[in-house]
Image: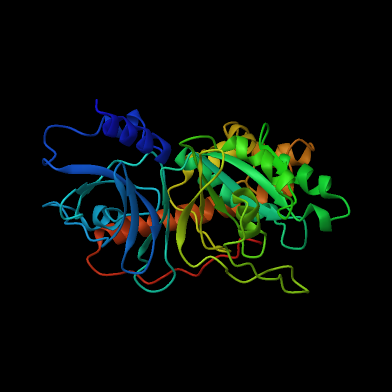
Length: 356
């Protein structure tokens, strides 16, 4: 390998290139193609980086013959994706198989699929120690992380404004045994610095949380800059406005990458049965002893879940959240299956309030 080739290989590894992606390259790939990672998604353009440089290119990609409508929706570049592009024309040849993918159905008629982020190693689920803190919302994000196999870390911000931040941490840790929870002051680089160990060379961490919880401030502290705009939180309800307008990856001093996404207060569940089972495993295990296999765990006789609640072994509030998320997942999964079979868009279902 030449010196330039060695330097290019090092840069690819710094970008997150690993054997999982390298194994997907074969003799069928056209000569003159090269791997590049999507670093940002803008309107009509995507920023990519590879061994030999950075480029701003169109996101268009030809759909292979016989591609189904459902597959075509996911065959579009998302931030974090690894692409194979033509070195001369910079046209996208194909998207390499993703190690992980976060996606959702957009609101409105047609329910277009939105690709949020790909190839994430760790998900920072960010919440603030104020009125915005919601166990229901954190559980929703946690189910998504478990479903796609990404390591979740609960990051609680604004501890400098809370009288008892440990109470918020205790509520977060109670969601699942062994769940990593970090308390940080997003404005203090020393406080945020301990998060950097979770984002080493070539590692990619994504941030997910409501607007106004301090994600942009935390990124500024991790990067040692003030490049990102931040906005004050509204008084009264503890919420803020969106300050992130594109999905973009930011380089950290520790060598990893941080990916911010626009704040999302609503993120519906669909096809997340495994994630639900992992996050709410105590109810799944108890349900195995129910008299009826189709027990809804409401008022049926012989319900082992309700028996566990009556005995004080299961949390009734958490049970209701599990039932609600399970029903939502079932309805949205059925809707997606119908949409895949239908040539016409389906009407959008009402969006749930994740704080309920």
